[in-house]
Length: 90
Image 1 (tube, helix red, strand yellow):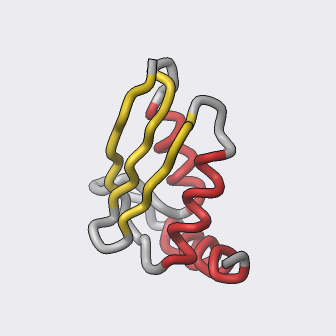
Image 2 (cartoon, rainbow, N blue to C red):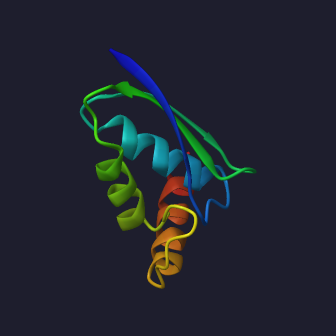
């Protein structure tokens, strides 16, 4: 069964960030579609119901895009790196 979820994260700055997030999430088993809204900082996922969102949130945090409200000092540097990688792959 397919489920839709919305995750709000911090530090999405540009299309490069969105590209990095989309590419990484689409490579995860159970993720069918990803839409990143840069302005609102939201990620809309279409995924298998069995997928645990906590694992996706952990992955986003490792990439430098923590869920809104989390305290993560290292995320800022990681998000800049992800941003640049995303821009180079556009």
